[in-house]
Length: 89
Image (cartoon, rainbow, N blue to C red; front, side, top):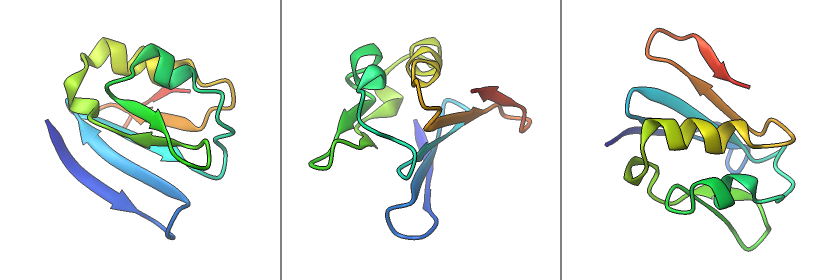
């Protein structure tokens, strides 16, 4: 279940807590390769600017979400565990 959504400066990043994981999309780093979308199309999509956005990240398993975030070649997706340990990248 998605528990939280936050945003810094408009458009810079989007963050959600999903299955106990804090997941952040850094929109300034994303260049639209779409590897995260390929790995978890229910969780991520590319917007009109070819930048990753959340769709329904709570619709995928924790493992699938981690794999999708780890697939980003430019490290635009960061994941922290429940205790604040950075898991990805």
